[in-house]
Amino acid sequence: MATLAIDLDGVSKSYGNKLVVDGLSFTVAAGECFGLLGPNGAGKSTITRMLLGMTPPDSGKITVLGMPVPARARLARGRIGVVPQFDNLDLEFTVRENLLVFGRYFGMTTRAVKAVIPSLLEFARLESKADARVSALSGGMKRRLTLARALINDPQLLVMDEPTTGLDPHARHLIWERLRNLLAQGKTIILTTHFMEEAERLCNRLCVLEGGRIIAEGRPHALIEEQIGCQVLEIYGGNPHELSEMIKPHVQRSEVSGETLFCYAPDPEQVRVQLHGRAGLRLLQRPPNLEDVFLRLTGREMEK
Ligand SMILES: Nc1ncnc2c1ncn2[C@@H]1O[C@H](COP(=O)(O)OP(=O)(O)O)[C@@H](O)[C@H]1O
Ligand SMILES: [Mg+2]
Image (cartoon, rainbow, N blue to C red):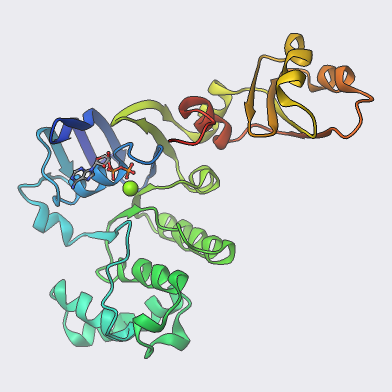
């Protein structure tokens, strides 16, 4: 039997009279990368804080690395690396000092922390910034430092809340590569993300949350097949509502988002034939992806 790194069983949490996590259950096996997806306010950060024992659940059972949380959270935290949604670095300290202080917090000797600092700086590509004050770093550099800091205690489990939000595409690709290496070393990762590409690339399994409940769960490719299962045509350059009526007989489903019409078409050629000769139309045909799944489940419209 595979060991479980995380076991949530019927966990609920309310703030005031607002139910934020609603009888949630899921497990994460050791060595897996599990994604929590969902619109803002879905409860993702609350779940990650509950896993760390920072927010007590109202009911249900949480076990992390075999330890009951929050009861044994302190012990569990010694084997967890944490990337909170918002950086909480010491701005007045240098990069190196931040790592030293954090290592000491885990009870490491100065010598032991100093021994791992070079590899952490390399991980974050911050070698040249070791003695710079954190206040002088860019947002992306701070995020990379937070990620490196999470590894200081050589954790078995990484709990990451939007690890790459605010990073530029280069830094994001660097972090993805680093996280894949950590997975190859056998670490377990649970992460929340707004980047569907991130979830698709990294996660073995994921769940989509809405209102503190799981609305879909599975392997990324299985979810794409299950929820979409055909080619997607993005059409723009015309009145999307009018175009939607025209192609209706040839698609499984279509959605308008802003000026773009998204068509889910088992035979995209038929749609092309139908629209042939219409001036100014742009058609982009592509395989379905996780973003289509997410938007199908949570709606293409922006919240509020
Ligand atoms: N400490 C808190 N006090 C009151 N409400 C909170 C608190 N933390 C989160 N919430 C509310 O709980 C809901 C879920 O928040 P959160 O877990 O941060 O969602 P997500 O990370 O998915 O965006 C939101 O409606 C948020 O306003
Ligand atoms: Mg959040």
